Image (tube, rainbow, N blue to C red; front, side, top):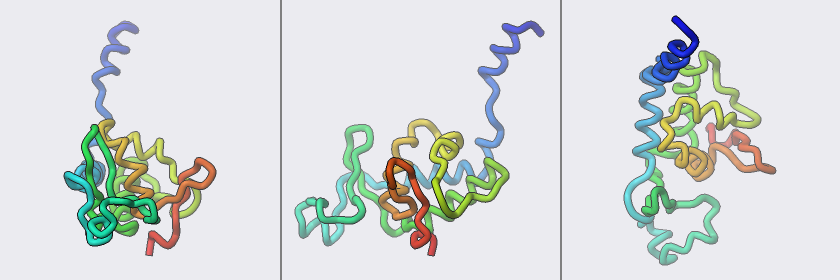
Length: 143
């Protein structure tokens, strides 16, 4: 096999780790973590959708469409559980539960169209906090 054939072959190589059940489940979880339309919870209804006083965002815009976080399935502990399973499956190592979250590593096993949902979900669930440009895992979200 010559060099050109090797390079072409590499383009079509699919990382088999991406088809592991926990990784597939995490991608499905990201798709279902947000519902269509703006948030209609009691607080958002009472404030007319003004979230400026909220600690965590409720309504997001993806692909120019408003979406809302599904609170019942996106608590920090829920997000962490799904992330830990996918991380272990993909990296064959335990997810470090303190310090900086390696978002670039997470993006390796998340479908590219879902990348834009990662950080909003991580922040809104309380799993991470942006500290000086680093995404730090929050111990209280893991309880």
